[in-house]
Length: 612
View 1: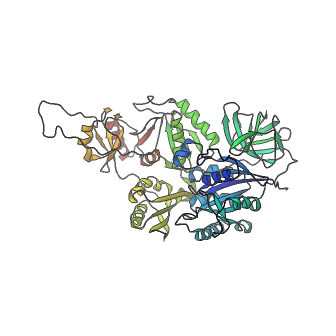
View 2: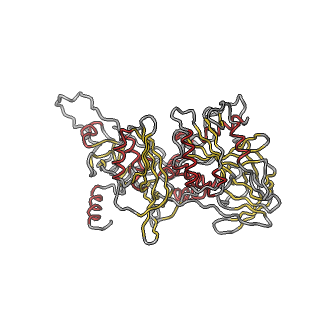
């Protein structure tokens, strides 16, 4: 099959925070995409507000540069394991990858995941050992680990013969040897052109294009993104969409055709095999569908991604504060939004339940689901979610659960406490080795359900200085036993505003999640109890006034500041009998059964083996 020589389609893949987006910034700058006088923000490809706030890539992005008359299409991919579905489908569009690895941290779980997917597709890689300017960088040791990783993933001889570059994406240089002169990214551009192939094309055959991503335009409706596998395409051409779901076909006319120039889309009249393009003209086309020749339609193999590992229930908000802060609050709004998300988010599964106002949503991890929740609340949705639960599989009569590889980097003084806590969570230690600056790296295998809630404990143990990475690597036999919160919660017994007097009087009962003057309702969780059991308290109690002066009447009431938790921390904190109420303005923990008497009846029923 002929190879097109004037184009390269590459994906930049790496573990989270290893410098992918920063490297693309430098490539765009040095290739002349931005003018010298043009003000460009850092991480220009991370244009979603959530991405910029969290400092991570969530959605894949496209850009292109020109180097020596060769067009290089670059796709920035997410680095977090929860968004592996984005990586899997993007690899369908490219002919090679840049594998970035931090010179100090070495290959981490997501490095292994993305590399395995690339090798399985037969792609070759250019290895970039990044951040060599770090004081704790160990580039040669990192290279040895990368080679061992390639071998362990059964790379072919061709894939093992990968070129290596040493780079600093922040300072904008790459070099073939560590002692070379630091100049610019020319060695990286040369490696892409010389060591990664152009796309294999069949220009004279009928059109085929696999839809690997979608977008939306207020003027044109749904936009589709994909690489032309064979043939040519023209603006205004009549084509056929072959739907992956049922094999049905829809004929339509291309109303628009775009190509990528820099980080923007530019109008194109025609594109040919090997080009990555954007089309418009059909609103019900989905990811995984094929756009084919109108007269000779032939489908390409569809897209598949790994199954979800976590599930939770999204339900309509029925708390006493329901409808006060949200714009979209009904079952119809919630169901339509979730099913619309499932059309573009291939790693997500959405299913109806026996209850009309509850919808089951499954994803690749807590962050995957948390990003969906945060996006929806910013759009004005109001709803409630249950505690995330792992999805169990049955195979040969055995129940299997997802397991994760967990890597901790901690001060040597905290190693014992981490091993003890993880031992209680059914983790098995794989390796432990000392690194620089009195740090220790420990690798564990742990059931996914036992890892939930550990991040908060870990930050406490390490005083916020520990580093933690994890990702699902497979399924093993279910170990049984429950691992959850070790303390109960403080539950409001009366509605109203919390008072400083009540919070001060009850301060010995635990830590609060709400400040004085905060509106609460009956059954709302307002704090964490010092003991294992839940405790119902009145945090709205007022001080009884009298004409008698007391010694302490004029003393200021000192209350510890409330513990504020992020969305991910709240999802980890949830128990089976609780819900998290989500509105555009607030995140509130609450009991499923708001009335204390109902909760007691439910506890007694469960003790008798019944469920109310």
